[in-house]
Length: 301
Length: 214
Image 1 (cartoon, each protein chain N blue to C red):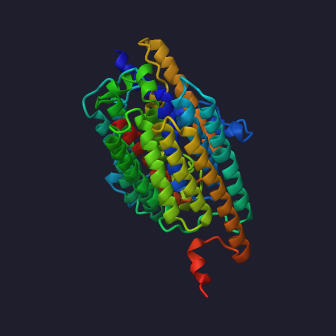
Image 2 (tube, each protein chain N blue to C red):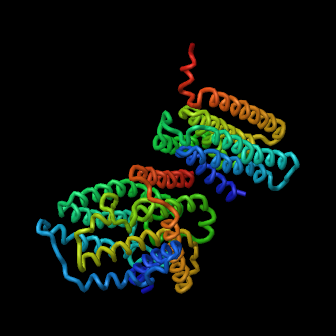
Image 3 (cartoon, each protein chain N blue to C red):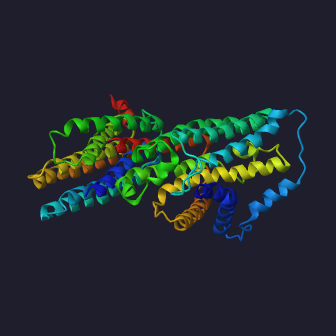
C-alpha cells in the first residue's frame, strides 16, 4: 500500500510546485504574485472550456496531449519518492523512465508538427535538439547511481542511498546532483534554457509547441508539465536528502519539504539568471554531461 | 582522511573542467585561485596525523602564492588588456571539454599502472595530479592568448605539486620550496613580458608574434 504514496503525492502536489516557483519569482521581483494554488485553478478553468481545432489538423494533433499525459502518469509508477518505493520496480526500469519521458515529448512534437505552423515546427526542432543531448546525460547520471548502489532499478537505487553509502560516495553524489539540477531546468524548459513566460514566438521552445491547443487539452499539457517537473525533481531531491529512516511519515515529510526547497531554488535561479543564447544551450547541457561523466569515472575505480 | 581527499579530487576536477570550458577572461584566474587553494590543502590532509611546521609552511606558502598572489597578478594583467574574452582558441571550448573526458579516463588508467610503485599515495590524488598535468599542457598548447597560457602553466604546476605532496615524504620542503620559487619567478617574468608585449603592440595574441619577423 505504501508503494502508492509516491504517485498519489505526485498527482496531488505537482501543480503546487509550479505555484511555489511562480510565487518565488514574484516575491524576488517585489510583487505579491498569484496564490500558490493558482495552477490548480488554471487547470480547472481549462477543463471547463470547449476545444477548438484548426481545420488542417488531424488525429495526431488530438493524440499529442493525451499520450503526453498518459506516458508521464505511467512514469510516476516507477519513480520512487526518496526512500518510499514506487509501486512497480523491475531491473532496467530506469531505461523505461527515459523512454516514457521521450515518448511524451515525441507525442507533443508530432502534434506541433501536425499544425503546419512554421513557429511550432521551429519550437519542435529546438525541443528535440536539446532533448537528444539531455537524454544521454540522464543515462550517465543514472548509470553512476546504479554503479554506486549496484542495482539497475530505480526503487532499490534510491532505497540503497543510506547515510553511509551517501558519505562514502559523496563526490560522485554531488556531481550527479548538479547534473540532475541542470537536467531539471533543461527538460522542463526553465530559465537558462527557455523562458516559460515569454510571449515572443521566435524565442520560445516548449511554449510555442502548444500554442494551438485549447480547452481540456491545454489542461492536460499544463498538468503534464507539472508532472514532468515533479518526476525529475524527485530524482534530484531523493538523492540530496539521504534520509532513510524506514519511518513512512518522516521520510514523506522530508521529501515534501525537499521538493518545496527545490521549487524555491528553481524560482531563485529563474529570478537571478538570464536566458542563454540558443547556441549556448547545447554547451550548457554538455557541461552537465561532463559532470556526470566525471562522476562515473570517479566511481568506476 | 579519504572522504576529504575525495571531495578535493571532485572539486579539483571541476575547476579543471571549468578552466577548459571557460570563455570569459575573468573566470580563469578565479577558478585558478580556487584550484590553488584546494591543492594547498592536500599536504595538510596527507600529514594530518603528524603535522610538522614544514608541512604547514609549505601549505600556507602554496595557498598564499597560488590562491591569492598569482590570480591577483593575472587579474591585474587582464584589467589592462584591451579584450575581454578568449576570442578563438585553437580548439574550441566544446572540443576542450570533450577532450577532458577521455583524458580523465587515461589519467585513471595511468594511476592504476602507477599504484604498485606508489603504495602510500592515495589513489584519488594520483588521478587528480596526472589529470592536472595533462590539462595544464593542453591549455598551454591550445590557447592563443598569453594569459590563458600562464594559467595553463600554473595548472601544470598544481599537478606537480599534488604529485610531490603525495609521493615524496622526506625532502618535501626543500624540493617544493624550490619549485614554488621557480613558479613565482616564472609568473612574474611572464607577467612582465605580457605587459610589455601588450603595451607595445596592443594585443597579447601569441599567434601573431610571427608578425615580428623583420
